[in-house]
Image 1 (cartoon, rainbow, N blue to C red):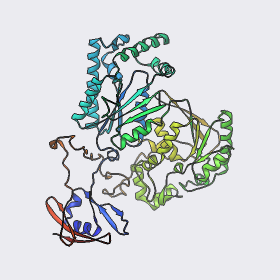
Image 2 (tube, one colour):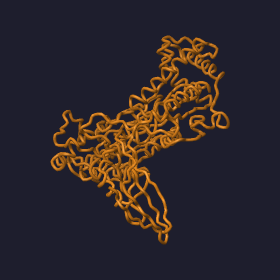
Image 3 (cartoon, rainbow, N blue to C red):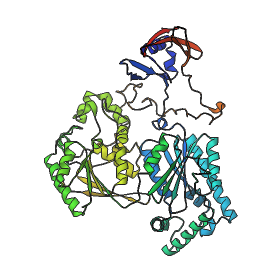
Image 4 (cartoon, rainbow, N blue to C red):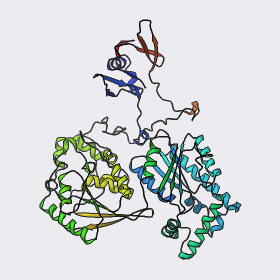
Length: 560
């Protein structure tokens, strides 16, 4: 990657227009000197997720049974999918139950049961085969291998599998010696496990505790001081009371660590509602900073009664910085926090318009949004994808807090609901979030329980259903979606070539990509530095630079 002057880029593209066709782009950045410079980079067409990860990653769970591995796997997968990184869990227990239809007792998990050990190893290999298919053929970016993986031999098998395919590996080990936490986990989750259909609670507890003892015999925890100091991992100790992090490799692993350090296993509920009906809601306008209508003020009073009726004395209240949410919270008579990132989606040039006016004024924009509502970005505004990224800190705080009431907006509430209910990006923009309704979200074992409370205050319906027929005749076939990497005329995304670390993949197996321009430098006796910018062996131009009083003076000669 090199910095060159804007004149140089103009000369390069004028003399060699084929460069733009071969995948080179020239984004502009402001220079400290007051001018501008360009960075020569390689551009690819692909999914948003491929820009967050430079190679597929396998997350390997480690830990004894009843340590919360599956709980963390499912939550982490839900979070990564929500931020746009395709992720899937591969639970080895599912593969084992497919191979062994009838589970009898803990004897299956004894280390000296050779037949069972062979079955378990075959199940692991089948699961790894599916991991490969997901990451290589199905467009996945991250696979979560959810199993005990308690022996160094099993972990070496996974590391060898990943190394052959240039996958990165990140281990997540859950360590817990708190008997109360373990007992609660067994009672809440394992008693209803498919391994124990129609069995008494007491017999389930007895068998499962013996299963744990079978694993303890061969358990080899990660050793950060000796055997495993070169591995990338996080150890989660006693469900988040402390952590040990070792050798984080990249951006996505740092996000995984940050997320795991913020989730806590405690009983709490999250209450979501929209502001009371606003004047703009009545008029059918979007965005803006309107005040509450008469019905909206009635809802604010009803919300106060709801909070008092449910005895939510320790409730934290969050609002956006827009008047309609603040007015709704004021009626509660309790302290509240204003979050700018909870503001409604920015509709840009369409702010304060009705949908009918938008369709007449900006027919192309109206059609584009119907074709891909999640990725579509309003001119001068935001997309739902932008909103998800903006709301990420809110999710982190909600995971850490106790009972919270979030008074927000329709698009914001959709994004938050999509996270907790594990909804896809395609479904997110069409989730129904009616006015004057409170949703209570209570985290349960592997998901989230939803209770809906209609406060019986009339309001307009602001929901717009997914269009059954999408008009694309008003949009040119070559029109590019904002904030997207795929032309509208293409139904299939072009996969972005993987980027591999040096030495990870044989040269013969590396994807063919266009050559980037390179530079050759030399200096003459008078202090001038000359740079030849080359592409495919041809000189595109010559730059000369001399430093006077610490400032560079640059001249450029294009070469045809």
